[in-house]
Length: 201
Image (cartoon, rainbow, N blue to C red; front, side):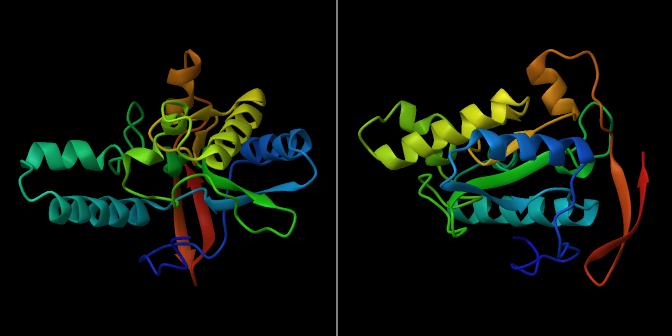
């Protein structure tokens, strides 16, 4: 998605930890045959995380001129993690253990989940339609299906974004009550918008 949006440093392909890829294969087995998964983003280089953080921050600042600097940062953090390799607060996408995705039909066309990917809206909260049952029944059912299949195989959802799921990283460990994460950060060398070399931190 970010490659298509021409975000500096973004990747032309989606990279994931092998364990995340295997879990997604299990999700596909749980989904009814008329459904597919559409992947938006997986591993994210540090530069892209920085660029996204500043893009979101500036948009929130523009849309909320009365917000203090602290309010702007807090609102930004609802939608994008602070770019960090610190082990206790590492950005989830820097580990290869985070995935942004949606449901599609058999042709690969996205289904209605109530908002666009990365939409800065209260409707992006995973359970929004659980609290507004009559607003969009299709989105409610599709979010339930995605959530139930993803969590059934071991993913943990970030409740502020219906599209974001973690496996094996520090955010997953905290939500699942695990003592430590399986995946740390990954540093990469990028050439022609593809990973040329990588190193586990």
